[in-house]
Length: 237
Ligand code: SAH
Image (cartoon, rainbow, N blue to C red; front, side, top):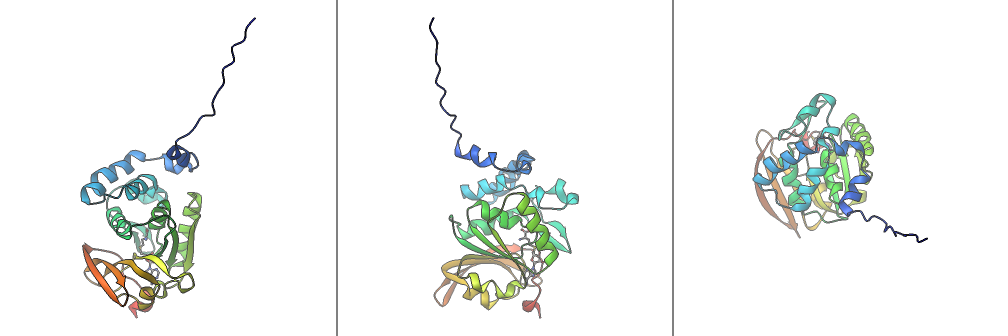
């Protein structure tokens, strides 16, 4: 009598598959809508960095907006997140993210946690994220939602983002997601040399500005008109 032995090799999963396997169920919902957002709005409007594109295909924006706004989560416009605040338009979040040229391990400071969507995108790209929100309730809500999604490498601070986060400086990039009419000085000090600060600048009308710190000088690029909520706190007084 002869036996046939079949040796089974352990199955090797592709790294992408393994990455998805460890994600909560929210990541498996609404993939088609996320792909449509990327294909129809982001790529045709200048988003070309493959890593940024992947992050927008992955992060479940619908899990970070309230239940009322979930059906509109993948339209390219801002949505209300309560307390008169908005989650920014995906194309603008993508432009700001792409502008920073994120590499794994970069320390990024975000002013205006809001829903936590921008922070999740940054962590998906491998950044170490520090995010400051002036409204405690919004920060708590974002902390809870991001935790449920497994975004655990995000550091939260409740306070006035005018002052940045001096004990964690310097940063490899700074994003403001609320508009001041001039750049808060502490933020410039907390930015590493040759790195960028990206912000909506202005009161009634705003321009998205990319500011590179070059020693004591700055190189300014205007990325076009935008509409963010105004920055409150010290900068407004
Ligand atoms: N990045 C967010 C969108 C933020 S909307 C997202 O991805 O959803 C702007 C946020 O900035 C609001 O939550 C508002 O409360 C906050 N904000 C306004 N002024 C601020 C300040 N001085 N410091 C920190 N946060 C501020």
